[in-house]
Image (cartoon, rainbow, N blue to C red):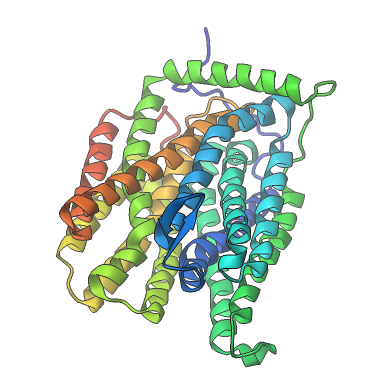
Length: 441
């Protein structure tokens, strides 16, 4: 009988649950989360908006700076969503999971450092390319990083280990952000000039160095690749495509897994949209200043540390499905509260709620999916489906949010409509069940 995702094979006990390896895996979140916080959320977007013209023409097409910034993100995620399945297939077929993780990490880290030379409109193309490569390095590496989870741990460790990774990511990124804010607010402490953009640009270098150094430590503790000898890139590409086809057939033969992926796609569209646009909502709808936005970001990150562990705790006691429902109910309440929120103090409370479930639902989703993978041999290919779905969900959620904002003139209405994504996810999860023996965290 063929093996399906709904009937996972048992893990072998050899080389699993090694403390040094598990800590090394979680450390990678500490390394790369600095990019997600400092570059994509807290500092670089404001820097980009401050040094770029409000409107400019490229190849005969007029862009606003916000449209150009969005274009970079869209194109970067499109590239990764397109290449990720093939690369992950090659990684499994050719035994190069760790090699690709190191490659994407190097690209992302060096791209962050190169942002130092982005100083204005005359270096727009450098800034565009560096930011895009940073996004590709960050997003591209995640599928290979996630795929190590079922390789290094047994299912009973998935929830707690996944939560540990997210928690370490939040802690590390907040620590670096605080250092970066000190560099910007008090540049003289670091021997930097008080005028100009040098202090801000140095923070981009710190992110790249932080990412590369801590990732190197993490990679040194992860299992080495077991290469398939005698195969070139073209051969591995063919093998990778064949493996992806095989994985897709297994996924199609596993209705339970399809249900989970459909639910994950639905609620991820809501989750990622809220995360990406929370600061924009605060700025446009509630008039938050830059310093107040930084406080919002810090609240999100700090509360998310406890949220990731809370999700693991609920899952351990009541099961993954109940844990996901617990998270989704709070997400729905956040969308409803966001529609009615008026004052800044109230919004800080809403932001804290977002932080509580932001890390929790991502952590629990990752560990739940890991429990559905039948073997440790081709985990990268399985996670490529998961990874691509999340990226497409980002595109879908933000596109619908923007369209509703355009039609109604209100981000509040758009936020209210996001609750539909969470409701759909909860409905789909009604038919989802984890395999016997894999429910507890």
